[in-house]
Amino acid sequence: MRYRIGCVLIGLAMAASATTTALAQIDDGSAAMGDSAAVAADTAVVPGVADLPVRAALFLRVLDPIEDDVEVPLATSALAIGGVTLSNAVVSIDGDLVDVDEQGGFSAVAQLDEGANQIDIVASDSDGNQVTTTLFVVRGDA
Image (tube, rainbow, N blue to C red; front, side, top):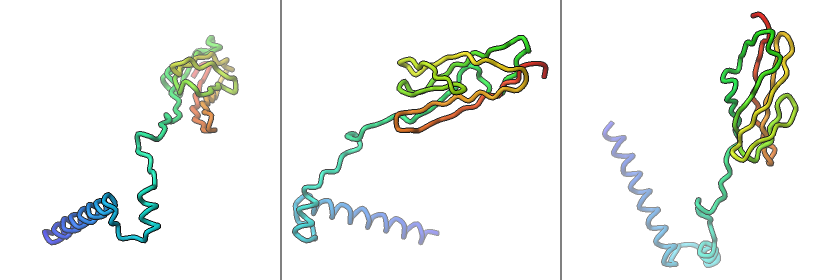
């Protein structure tokens, strides 16, 4: 076991040393590559992580109702649905477009049939990505 750990540590030390040597050679222009490759390496522009644009991942969270499976009395003919997504997302509830506010909040009312209802909530972004959540609502006696 000690032998394996020792081998791993030696390997890591050699890799760090080789990386440091290569970076030092590139910095002082004495890289061991052909002239054209050395010029290309010196003039290549690699954007840093901070330079890359960051886009938030599309998400959809239904806040009302909290549960995905809901039972309501027969006297309830509509269900209020509310949630949050990206502010620039397009949201539909059962195919009907819903307004999204500047914080990404949305709300709508879905009409319920007697018995089992399946309500699809879809958020889409400008890249064509979609996220779907489905609510299952039973209207009437359980």
